Length: 231
Image 1 (cartoon, one colour):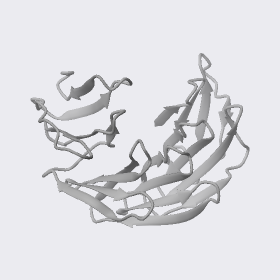
Image 2 (cartoon, one colour):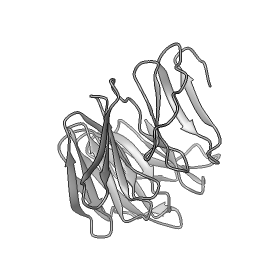
Image 3 (tube, one colour):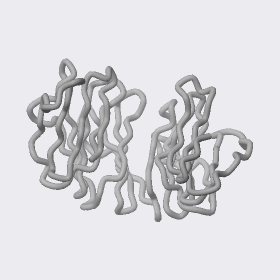
C-alpha cells in the first residue's frame, strides 16, 4: 500500500493492491472517499504540493489526475494518462504545477502537460529508474539501475551532465532546499551531489542504506541503515 498526506495534512490517500484508492480524514477509520476501481493494482497515490491534484498510478502504466475541490477529488479524473504497459515507479510534479513526470519500469519517463492532459515529451534511457524535477523546476534528474545519474534541461531535455556512481541508485532522489541531490545505494554508500560543485564525501553505513532525507530547514541530513543505525 502506498500512502501520501495532502499538503494541509487533513487527508491521507492510500492506494491498494485491490485497485482502489481510499482517502481518510484524521482520526477516522472509515474512508471519507473511495475512488473508482483503477483496473489494476494501485502503486502510487500522490498529492501535488499546491493541493490542486491527486494522482493515482497503477502497475499497467495508467496515471489518473483527479482535480481537488476543498481538498476532495472530483467524481471523475480530469485526465487518464496512459504510458507504457508497465509499473509506474514514480511521479513528480514540476514546482510551478504545470507538468507531471512519470517514471515507468519499462525504461522511460513521460512528461505530461497537466492543463491539457497531453504528452509533452519523453525520456528514454537504458536502465532508467526514477526521475524528479529540481527544486527550481529548470532541470530533471534521473537515477537508475546502472548507477548513472543524469541531469537534463527540463524544457529541451538536452543532457547537461552525467555521472556514473558505480552502483544501483535505489531510492528516489532527495533534494535539500538549496538544491543538493542525495542518492542512496543498494550498498552502504551515501553520495551527495551538488548540481554545480563537487560535494564532500559522506561517512558510509556499516550495512545497507534504507532511507535518507534533509530537514526542512536544510541544516541536517539524516540517513538510516538496515541494522537500525540513524546518522
